[in-house]
Length: 449
Ligand code: ADP
Ligand code: ASP
Ligand code: MG
Image 1 (cartoon, helix red, strand yellow):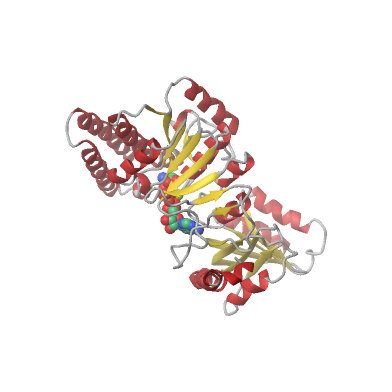
Image 2 (cartoon, helix red, strand yellow):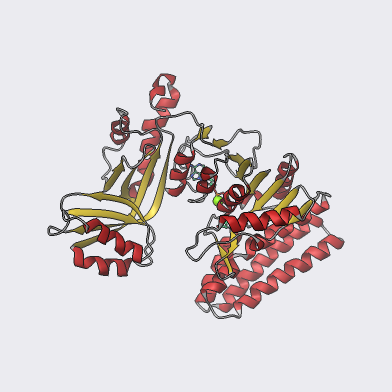
């Protein structure tokens, strides 16, 4: 059994959906196809939500109408006219009415989640009728019937596996279509796995059913060595370990949802990242047998806030760090990086929802300084502490850039450091030039790449 996940661009137009249908058709065996919303739709739904929150109902209705037009065009492109066109148009009108009815309700967290779920519900509906039109033996399965998170937002793998398996066993088809991103929570209400969460859905399904492979089909030929949005001359990585890929995803490689590698890694299921628009390209294989490379890839995570706690009294006292961590735990805020000195400890967080309370509670431990607009740069590779020369190779490239924090030695495959976001693009480019370009040009420099 294989899970194939297709992102927003892959299902963004009818032409692209047909490419996806070809890829699904050309894959053998039992297939579970996970789809994102059509590209731009979740952003549009988020705009509708923002307008409802601002009580700008007319603007919200205009945005809903724009979405409706986009869907109606898609249905026309799919079927032209005839009975299928009528049936699909009616269904799209139904989805439109659902959105309109939301715009009459009071703003609430639950309303937000229900609106955000509408994108994947529509894209999977459209794709299923495209397959039906092509006489493909497939079934649309609602992710809301099996995908579940608990009260802490963590996926419940047993529930996912048991419920999905029961659905698969009751249906004699080879291709199942389902929504990425959406799920139910511990109250059985509609919820989601956070932006970009369709990758996570694919990995969770793969792990829950112990499939042979999880395929992530996107708009680029696999994972690149650096962020192609900010750096020219990046290249696709042939293979990468689970740990390195998980680290890069967590630290900003947008191609994968931050948590999406963990379920696959835990069940040792290979993840193949492929390009829908260039299926011949080998893509990137994420697995546990990836040949070691000193420096594999670089990623950057923005919107980082650093908090420094300075205390001459307490830092050396045992239990001090625990008390600090408790503040973050109580406020359900994850810490990304930490560095200590004799008189101060610096931490970074990316979720600032509870920052005011955290600062308030930390005041009793010492002097607090907060710095915002920072980015973590993450370098993944074989960075074990017994290796010589790697750290100097990295820092030599960026000797003109001020560095706020460095984290090294926490694991064997990651080095991260903190810079001002204003310096991020320069840092990514300097590292690319210093660590990859020259080395790629000259095979002799293989010792670092
Ligand atoms: P999808 O809609 O298919 O989920 P995403 O937009 O979420 O696609 O992810 C693909 C995009 O991720 C690429 O188009 C690329 O711009 C961006 N990206 C960021 N970092 C990387 C990286 N290291 N390798 C490849 N793509 C990356
Ligand atoms: N549609 C959702 C988003 O845009 C989930 C996804 O595409 O993975 O974030
Ligand atoms: Mg994505």
